[in-house]
Image (tube, rainbow, N blue to C red; front, side):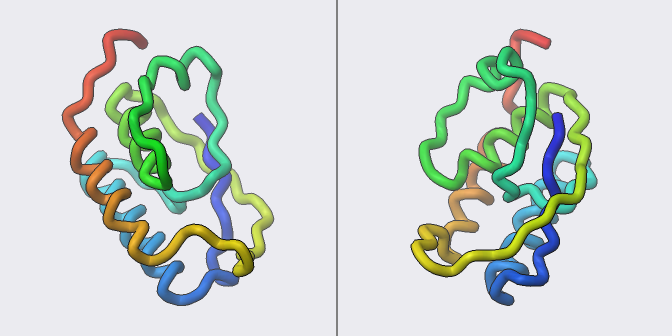
Length: 115
Protein backbone atom coordinates (compact mmCIF):
# COMPACT_ATOMS: atom_id res chain seq x y z
CA UNK A 1 0.00 0.00 0.00
CA UNK A 2 1.20 3.48 -0.75
CA UNK A 3 -0.17 6.67 0.79
CA UNK A 4 0.72 10.11 -0.52
CA UNK A 5 1.67 12.32 2.40
CA UNK A 6 0.61 15.95 2.00
CA UNK A 7 2.37 18.93 3.52
CA UNK A 8 -0.43 20.30 5.68
CA UNK A 9 0.91 23.83 6.13
CA UNK A 10 -1.56 25.28 3.60
CA UNK A 11 -4.59 23.91 5.49
CA UNK A 12 -6.65 26.03 7.82
CA UNK A 13 -5.45 25.58 11.38
CA UNK A 14 -8.56 23.73 12.59
CA UNK A 15 -8.37 21.27 9.67
CA UNK A 16 -4.63 20.80 10.19
CA UNK A 17 -5.04 19.90 13.86
CA UNK A 18 -8.10 17.76 13.13
CA UNK A 19 -6.15 15.76 10.57
CA UNK A 20 -3.24 15.38 12.98
CA UNK A 21 -5.60 14.20 15.75
CA UNK A 22 -7.36 11.59 13.58
CA UNK A 23 -3.99 10.35 12.30
CA UNK A 24 -2.71 10.12 15.88
CA UNK A 25 -5.80 8.09 16.84
CA UNK A 26 -5.11 5.67 13.98
CA UNK A 27 -1.50 5.34 15.07
CA UNK A 28 -2.44 4.65 18.69
CA UNK A 29 -5.27 2.20 17.92
CA UNK A 30 -3.38 0.28 15.23
CA UNK A 31 0.26 0.64 16.24
CA UNK A 32 1.03 2.47 12.99
CA UNK A 33 3.34 5.36 12.17
CA UNK A 34 1.23 7.26 9.67
CA UNK A 35 1.78 10.91 8.88
CA UNK A 36 -1.46 11.65 6.96
CA UNK A 37 -4.25 9.10 7.29
CA UNK A 38 -6.82 11.38 5.66
CA UNK A 39 -4.96 11.69 2.38
CA UNK A 40 -7.10 10.89 -0.63
CA UNK A 41 -4.00 9.53 -2.38
CA UNK A 42 -4.05 5.84 -1.56
CA UNK A 43 -2.81 3.17 -3.93
CA UNK A 44 -3.22 -0.59 -3.69
CA UNK A 45 -3.89 -3.53 -5.93
CA UNK A 46 -7.52 -3.92 -7.00
CA UNK A 47 -7.81 -7.39 -5.44
CA UNK A 48 -6.82 -6.01 -2.05
CA UNK A 49 -9.28 -3.12 -2.31
CA UNK A 50 -12.12 -5.54 -3.10
CA UNK A 51 -11.23 -7.70 -0.07
CA UNK A 52 -11.74 -4.73 2.24
CA UNK A 53 -15.52 -5.01 1.76
CA UNK A 54 -16.02 -1.29 2.36
CA UNK A 55 -19.17 -0.15 4.16
CA UNK A 56 -18.67 3.57 4.74
CA UNK A 57 -20.11 5.97 2.17
CA UNK A 58 -18.74 9.36 3.25
CA UNK A 59 -15.40 10.74 4.38
CA UNK A 60 -15.15 8.07 7.09
CA UNK A 61 -14.18 5.65 4.30
CA UNK A 62 -10.61 7.00 4.64
CA UNK A 63 -10.47 5.68 8.21
CA UNK A 64 -12.16 2.41 7.24
CA UNK A 65 -9.61 1.75 4.49
CA UNK A 66 -6.70 2.49 6.79
CA UNK A 67 -8.09 0.42 9.66
CA UNK A 68 -8.80 -2.60 7.49
CA UNK A 69 -5.44 -2.48 5.72
CA UNK A 70 -3.61 -2.35 9.04
CA UNK A 71 -5.80 -5.08 10.59
CA UNK A 72 -5.07 -7.30 7.56
CA UNK A 73 -1.36 -6.84 8.21
CA UNK A 74 -0.42 -4.77 5.18
CA UNK A 75 2.45 -2.31 5.42
CA UNK A 76 1.56 1.24 4.38
CA UNK A 77 4.44 3.01 2.65
CA UNK A 78 4.31 6.80 2.64
CA UNK A 79 5.63 9.08 -0.09
CA UNK A 80 5.59 12.89 -0.03
CA UNK A 81 3.35 14.56 -2.61
CA UNK A 82 2.76 18.14 -3.69
CA UNK A 83 -0.48 19.55 -2.27
CA UNK A 84 -2.10 22.93 -1.85
CA UNK A 85 -5.33 23.10 0.15
CA UNK A 86 -8.38 24.43 -1.66
CA UNK A 87 -11.22 26.24 0.04
CA UNK A 88 -13.99 26.72 -2.52
CA UNK A 89 -16.59 23.95 -2.90
CA UNK A 90 -15.17 22.16 0.13
CA UNK A 91 -17.50 19.50 1.55
CA UNK A 92 -15.40 18.53 4.54
CA UNK A 93 -15.72 20.36 7.83
CA UNK A 94 -14.10 19.93 11.26
CA UNK A 95 -17.14 17.88 12.31
CA UNK A 96 -16.07 15.26 9.76
CA UNK A 97 -13.47 14.02 12.21
CA UNK A 98 -16.07 12.36 14.45
CA UNK A 99 -17.22 9.78 11.86
CA UNK A 100 -13.56 9.02 11.09
CA UNK A 101 -12.84 8.41 14.78
CA UNK A 102 -15.95 6.24 15.03
CA UNK A 103 -14.79 4.17 12.03
CA UNK A 104 -11.31 3.73 13.49
CA UNK A 105 -12.87 2.44 16.70
CA UNK A 106 -15.42 0.22 14.90
CA UNK A 107 -12.90 -1.62 12.71
CA UNK A 108 -10.21 -2.20 15.32
CA UNK A 109 -11.32 -5.85 15.63
CA UNK A 110 -12.14 -6.42 11.93
CA UNK A 111 -10.80 -9.66 10.46
CA UNK A 112 -10.32 -10.60 6.85
CA UNK A 113 -10.61 -14.15 5.54
CA UNK A 114 -8.05 -13.52 2.80
CA UNK A 115 -4.50 -12.34 2.58
